[in-house]
Image 1: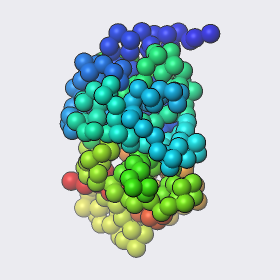
Image 2: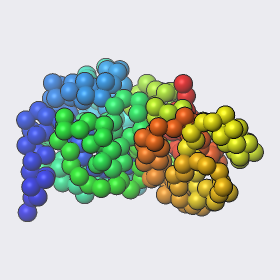
Image 3: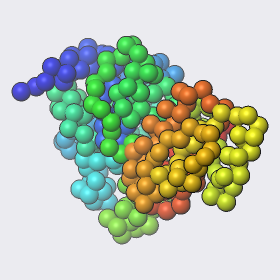
Image 4: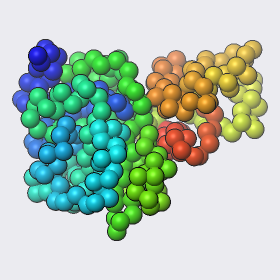
Amino acid sequence: MQSDLIRKATEVLQGGGLVAFPTETVYGLGANAFESAAVEKIFSMKERPSSNPLIVHIAEISQLKDLVEKVEPMEQLLIAAFWPGPLTLVFPKSDKVPKIVSGGLKTVAVRMPAHPMALELIKSCGFPIAAPSANPSGKPSATHHEHVKAYFGDRIFRMEGGETQHGLESTVVQVKNKVPHIYRLGSVTPEDIERVTGVKPVIDTRSPHSPGTHFKHYSPETQLCVLTKEVWKTRIYQALEHGKRVGILATTESARSLRGFEVTVFDLGSESNLMEVGSRLYSGLIELDQQKLNIIFVQEFPKTGLGLAIMDRLQRAASR
């Protein structure tokens, strides 16, 4: 039996409106992927550059036939391994995909989310849903429905699905000449992709073919500074000496070392569990940004595995 929430969200989308819905990565701001006028509302609501392509979300493999020209063998391997899940694949697009969805490119980014609410919504609508993250362009992505409410109030229909699982946007990959190219780092790591394909991926996080690759992105209003462990305490102490109100985004272990410092701390979880750190990253940025601080310091993470994706987001968030 279909829930009232799914029924209402379906009515909004079928009527050409926007719906914020949970996925396992972040909340998406969705519209009918085949309706240009509806998709235009996403760009307007987010104040998003029209050159920045969107991800099309599907619930069944059969929906690919209306979106893409072909699926290569390596793409089949990746689909079998990671769908439903936090992997987006970039394909040559079909003529049915509006130009506004692809940012004017000849490709389209597609994924199948792993969140049951998202899958049920797509199936109920009967069409794929184009959706970037549900936040104003350039701001930290929403990982809880309360973040969506803080960003947009009642201007859009909001599905309340609590906190998301991964907290980082999906990994974006395009297979070119039988080599996977990673355009956006995420929970599916380069090591994961090499394990499935047998080919070491190329990392190209400045590609125009992917959403979320504008260098300044995910940024709080408060100045954000990424610190190495060597200068961590020194920089915090200097900021406090200059009378600054300091926020700290840190693992549980690093937070313990700051006892006695008059700082506002957001605990990201244990440094031994980077999945938890990733899932809490945007919540920490959003919460500290609401504290009227002068600066937020965040510790550096190892640039391997999931740490690569975490550092990618932090470096983009800290760029000014």
